[in-house]
Image (tube, rainbow, N blue to C red; front, side):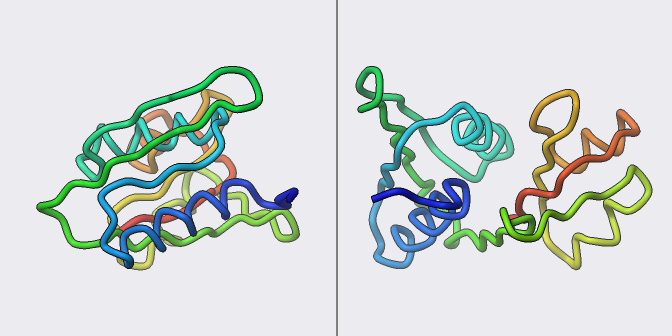
Length: 128
């Protein structure tokens, strides 16, 4: 079944897996999903990331850390309503969340890196 918002679907799969107390979550692979997971692993939110399969059957498997509370993942920019932020407006959109992921001209970045590089972009999601 086709999905209109693959990133939103992936975030929902991760939320549902954590609420179901599963140790792992699987979804269809894409470069942006893999980049998001690598950022989350780098900041200590995920334990392991594996890419399995080949071609159109490629999947990404994410293992959650057991010592962390379930993640609060919130999709901000959707296909019907894109949210772009400039370099000065990034902090204002966090609203107490720990981390925000943006797509920029330099690739996927956290809000910390985007502020440091002084670039803005599309606000994909927030994590706390």
